[in-house]
Amino acid sequence: INVHRPPSPMGHGLCWRAGERPPISAEDWQAEYDKYRASPEFKLIHSSMTLDEFKFIFWMEYGHRMWGRFLGLAFVIPGTYFAARRFINGSLARRLGLLFFMGGTQGLVGWWMVRSGLKEPEAEWLHPRVSPYRLAGHLVSAFAIFATLTWTALDLGSPRPLVRDMGEAAGAWAARVRGKLLPFAALVAVTATSGAFVAGMDAGRAYNEYPLMGGQWIPEEYWALWDKGYGIRNFFENTAAVQFDHRTLAHVTAASALGLWGWMRYVVPQGALPRRALLAMDLVVAVTLAQVGLGIWTLLEYVPVHLGSAHQANALNLFTAVLAALHALRPATPGPVAAAVGRLAAPVSVAAVAAIGVAVTQQQ
Image 1 (cartoon, one colour):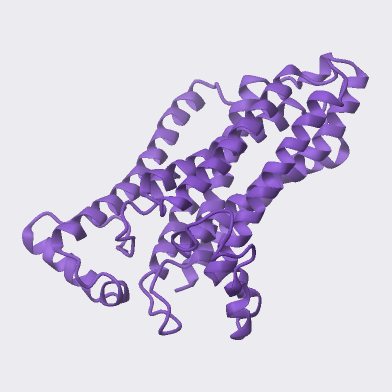
Image 2 (cartoon, one colour):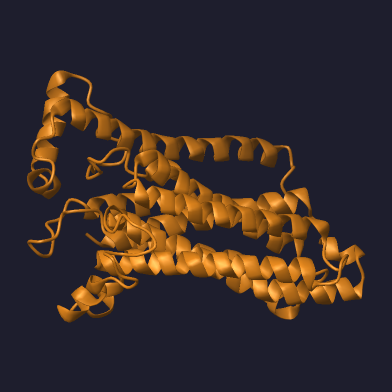
């Protein structure tokens, strides 16, 4: 997930057919370079880019593509071995099949995303760039795969719900905490998705100050595109709105994490929750605060690549900690709704992933 970030201020913009070999000879490189020079990104942003600079971003893009294929092999080869040895039961086989399907579709979504960067911008004041909507879709898809992998690993490591051996009172408290932790997990996911729009719009390279934006608490340009008739797109394509919303969501996430942690530690009776859930929530708070600090640091430093990548990687750390807390609070016996969701999750997910795959191949 983290390798997809732009490796340099030159940014992305390359697109080639899946399976095409990289250039080898000087003539091949010149031909590929000429293709890029014909793109709107080169003409409007990187017209001074040399062939050597082009080679750098080409190899970063190509390496990301090859790494994705390697991950597919790293999944299929051991999976085939374990299946042949009958180490994989029916429910795990369905989960792993879904993950493989999701991984394949992720490649299509990535191709669909990169292709959008080769289009002419809608307005003369806009720069050609990868669609922030498609970038967010690519990131959300990656997070969905990561979450499914993480939950599967947690299931294998702890197949028996922890509250099953703690009594009825513990089960009741776990249900109450889980009811608050689920919306918090959704908030974390929304905040991470808003970060994808910050990256897609290069919004982190504006308003490089904190806590104000342009000397104001709410930037004057917040409604700029709304006034130009963009409507709701203002919140996804306006740099000021995108960054302000991400800041606000981050603040709400941090406050929610602290409040939830304090309630679990000091209001919920001692011993009523699994120790693993409490430790996971300790980690959630620590990672959340680190994420806020890292985000501010990244902004003030004008988004250097190493800080931007660290900020994104730490978002995965936070997501992992939240999933670990939720997993530790699983009910002893799934309720009727949870059982129905469990039965329908795999076929519905397969249908959704297939629909996404078909949709992205039909669009320009």
